[in-house]
Structure formats: C-alpha cells, structure tokens
Length: 253
Image (spheres, rainbow, N blue to C red):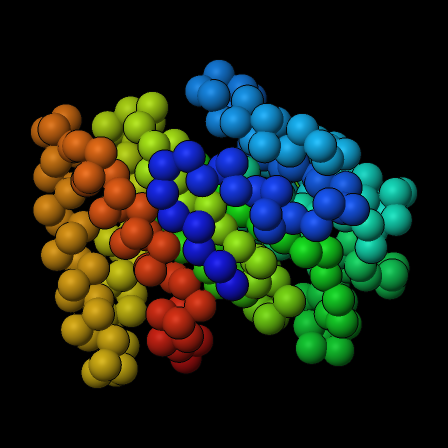
C-alpha cells in the first residue's frame, strides 16, 4: 500500500483513484463539513461521480454498514471505489463494506466471519483519509465490527482488506482539541504496550522508540503546548502502531 504524507495531500486523491470509478465517501459525523476536510475532498474529486454515506459509529455497527453495502450493490459494485474519511472505526467499517459488497451469499455476518478464507474472494478497492490518528488501521488488513442488535463483535483479517493508499495530513488534526488528542495518544500507547509484551525481540526496540515519541508528545498535549511538529510525530507513530508489519507481531494466543 501507499502512504501519502504531508500537508495538503488530499489534493493528490485524483492521482490514486481511477477516473472511471464511482467514489463512495464514507464518514462518521458531519464534523468533517465544519472543519474544511469535506471541502478539500470535494474539490479534489470534483471530476468524479461521488456518493456519500455518513453516520458510521465509533464502534461500527453491522446493520449500519449493511445499509452502505446495499447502496454499492444497487449500483454495480465493480464500478466503485470506497474512500474512508475518519479514524480507525471508519476505516474498519469501510473494510467490511468493501468485502461485503462483493459477497453474494445470504449471510455475510456468519460466512465472512466463520469462513473468511473460503468466502472472501474479492473486495471493492479502498482508500483512506485519516482525520483522527490512533490505531494504524489504515495500514493493516484487519477490521473489527460490532452487531449491537445481538451484542456481539467480530473481526476479519484478510489481505484484500488492506487499503490501496492512506492520506496522512497532519494539518487535519490541528482543529482537534488537546484533550481528544491526548485520549488518542493513550489509546496508541496501549496498543504499543500490547506488542511490547510479546516475545518478538526485534519488535522490542521498535516499540521502545514508539513509546518514547508518544510519552514526549503526550506531555505536550496534556499541557496544551503541542506544536504542528508534535502532531506530525503523533500521526506517524499511530500509523506504525498496528500497521501491516507490526500488527503481525500481536499473536492471537
């Protein structure tokens, strides 16, 4: 996959999305329309046919995601490109939408969970614009989805869930309150510690470096003195937390 890092990189979207694709832009709340993110994406994709799906929850709900799947299936899934705009939850939800939209069975909840290798054969291509750094979901092939109706949660891990690209623009995190960023940094800290507790010696040095950067910038967030450079460091570190490489060091046993 490709990481597109830096200020103003949303403008690069047309270079990475085929011109003949219909873009399904998925997001959570309407806050992206209040902080210029929506306008930047709309400008970048002005020559595309863009459809929108909002309201994806912080713990993406299966029933909500299936509504997005219905939109894609009603309009030839092969012609779509999904653009996830948000944090880890939005990214996870869009990964599920990508595989469920190409699945023709009667029970995507059960089949995609229980028989992943057998049932997942294709997926709608997916790209990500990260607005809330925390988990590195934009750089791995795993997603976690909740079914609030049955009070269950499941995960899917398959190579086809790996996004084609992720836009990491540190300036998008500037409007976020210090308190919210501090929470995201702590979530990142926990994920790094999960890896540090494993027996992969080569990962110890990597996680120690990540923890050092996190603790330094966490202090800046708590004291409300974080700079743009600090937000850049946080975005890079969160991308490394559970990206495709480091996620493999988290054993299921």
